[in-house]
Image (cartoon, rainbow, N blue to C red; front, top):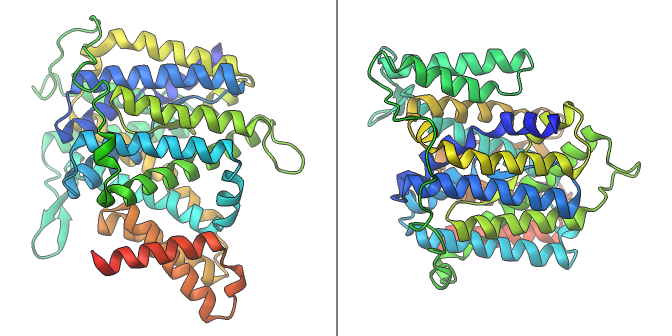
Length: 411
């Protein structure tokens, strides 16, 4: 139970950050808050009861940014269609999990590209977070430039990031949550933050509940979006499972993960549940490691975390009053943690590192996770072939590279 509380403290920031990100699409922020709490709570409880893992779930950072800024904002896809794409990606993930195709897909994608995708999503988040903080601004001459650092909101946002970094370095599980609340509180005397209470009846879910447009998502133009949601969720979930089970001592001596089918089924169910409620992909959270560090080893940890998310439903006024400059530093902080993936690259082998770095860099610079993945796979297949190591390129990599190349050619 203590581990469940620790995990909740480490990831409850999402109830403020996720509605803030997704509300940019025109979705109702109150309904988004309720959907976030319900999605995280119910999916975590299912993971605990069905898979017996100390693994909590919530709308994924990176996937929510891709949903809001790339799919809805960049591609002008209606948010209802985007929710349909999230639901279909969950269905695809469930089928792959039940048919045991997951092992083939995960094993076929090289580790270097997995690491590059993780870091690239982090850089994508960082760009969004820095812009919302006011640290980065648009420029017609240099594309991006330094923002107005003298702006009070920007100064508070930078201070909030430093608070998060300092507390995290000292081992504080709730570093992100404390940083957000402290930053918002500091904005009160400046008139930048306005609170309207702490507790209230949860906002209505009606504006987003079952609003997903599945027929629209089945259209040809959205197929690549569904596959991107699916691939990113698959890789993110696999990486989280491996990291968490290893830290908890649950991994078998041969490196395999027990009850993997159950864990993946619960995760895919979370994605479909989130879409039905009205939020972006619900997936496993690496912050679950905080609860494991506190002693969590069974599904009871995830159940406790889930129950606490359901209790959080009644704190909507507090969460919805948190301004962008208070929640944006969390994006940059999470991005810094995700960038750690690059340290595990084999830097002595350019055929591995170059595709990974291309993947990581092109995600923020093209403002597209899908484009970054596609370019990374193409570079990997071509470079390996040019040096005579084409046998190292799996069929799955060739398939994704060819599909990406065709998409780039006709867009």
